[in-house]
Length: 466
Image (cartoon, rainbow, N blue to C red; front, side, top):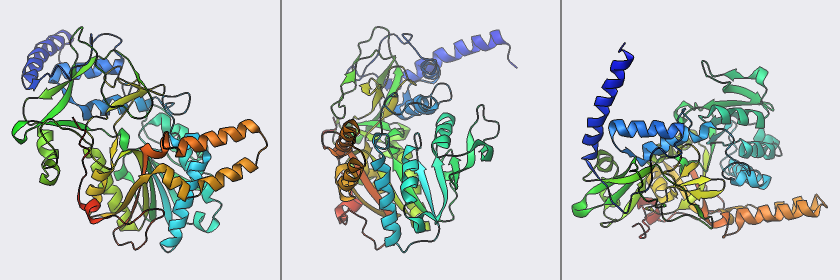
């Protein structure tokens, strides 16, 4: 063991040269710089990230997102209560029960169309509080023949706090629950909820399937880490990294925010810098000539390699076991350049301030997901959420709920929820839905149209990427 004093000195002498050496590799663009004093209101996690950067040099946006969202030292999703009106954001399932009910109907409908497989399982990626799965299972019980086929409900969730919330929402009993061994807090691993077996997994690779998987990924891909790149001269790709902010540097909020929410001005402790030459990540992720040829000098690109990996897994799982999948998220059917942002208390915030205190997201590139899965499964869409919900009968379900109560306030709340889910000025347009079917399927999913050859084989690019 190194004596404490010697370790401290070694750390000091090691960090200073490494930090200077690392920064020789990176160039700071004034237009990218954000931040102020690195010690201002720094969270415990922020201090940890700062120590990493001081020791090793600037880190990728992907690494920053990973630490800020999932680090055990105060990562955002380790907090548990981040959803709903009292949290930082509201998801569609939290707005109305109609959402989960209609998704269940979609799976029941396509269970019929695909020959009524005798064994099925639900798989949800990033289940949040468990509200969506709870509503889907409740609605599925209205179709006894379908419900009898459900073998297991698989929840892919890392957060111990969220697992406990999901455990209770799904009606699981602690006396029937197997816990994760050596976990610092009670963390469910396997249980029984309202007669169904429920299993939790840290990653998709842990999901073992012996039935037709019905997969739902709702607001999952937007939280996966992204790398940011900028195309330079002579076909070079510079990676945009995150460094410790210099004292008294001006704060510049990241451009291009989604929807009508206004950015919440904050003071950042970190800033963007740009590599002087091709980084290893750029060389690996931006090597496909079909992709690279679509960009010009100065274009910025966000790439989510973790999203590509999980999409490939999802497509292969569905094709191998004859399942179905829905990917629902906010994003576009083309590549964008600057959508990385933070969300705190239902407002957009500077993502480089107070890591761990806000959600970090980036718009999903559906064309990229479809491109990744093209040889493994069929992908249909995306289509707008409003179109999808209307085709499944949300207006008829709304009318049923309105007729079930005479309370004017409840009725108005129901109408408001319907509008929020479907209105193009709210969630109806910005949220997209993509269906995933086995490669060999002859079924055309409702309400999608057949994809064109161009959609199957090309990643589309939004030319407002600078």
